[in-house]
Image 1 (cartoon, rainbow, N blue to C red):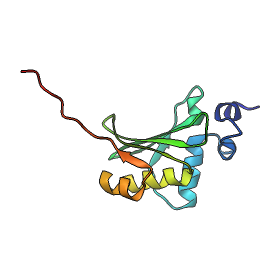
Image 2 (image 1 turned 90 degrees about the vertical axis):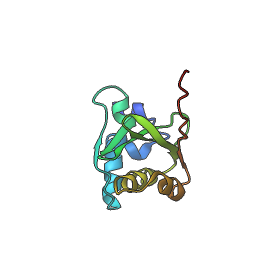
Image 3 (image 1 turned 180 degrees about the vertical axis):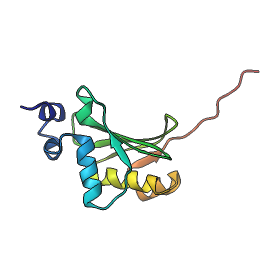
Length: 130
């Protein structure tokens, strides 16, 4: 069994094996559906090079990783390193759609309304000591 099929778990993600992991499969999916998701990267070493992807734009980073026990894609939308929205999608096309919508200027409120599996993270003001 190849490194990629071992890392991905062929039973859960057989469609990601041939392209070589999550990042190249995400790029292929976006291209097939004519979605602009920006530059997509993956870690260079270890298991995560097959199981993680980041779509980077001027607005922030859409980080994607794989569920281990069941098939789903965990999405974190980060701005300056802080998670602004998160969700779990069941289809790679949904991931590409979220990344493209965010890159195109969709607000967090519109994004979470359009993709109900995404949830905006609630921000709580930091209490300052008196």
